[in-house]
Image (cartoon, rainbow, N blue to C red):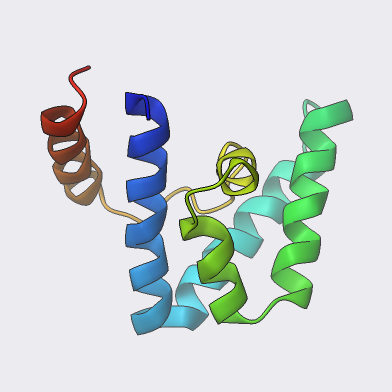
Amino acid sequence: MNFVDLFSLTLHRAVAAKILTDEYNVLKAAKSNLDRWLSRQDFTGEGSQALLEWKAILESSTPNEIITIISEDSCEGQRLRSSSPFSGVLTQNERKEIFDACAEIVPV
C-alpha cells in the first residue's frame, strides 16, 4: 500500500471511531459538506456523481454501514475515500498524528 492510500485509510478509520462516539455531529458535518459542495458550480461530471453517490450513501445507510464503507481496505473503499465528505471532522492535530504514524510505516 502506498502512503496516500494508507493515510486516507487511517484518516477514515479515525473518522469511523468518531462516528461511534459522536454520530450525529460527524454525519451532520459530512451532509453539510456535501450540500455546500453540490451547490457550487465547479463540481460537474464525475466529481458531481461522486458527491451524489455519497449523498445517497449517507441518506440510506446505517452508521455501522458507513463505518464499514469508509474503513474497509478494498478498491471500493479506496475509491469512495477519494471523494470523502468527511472533511473537517478530524482536527489538524489528529491529522498530523496520523500523517506522522503513516510516514513511519511508508516513508513519504
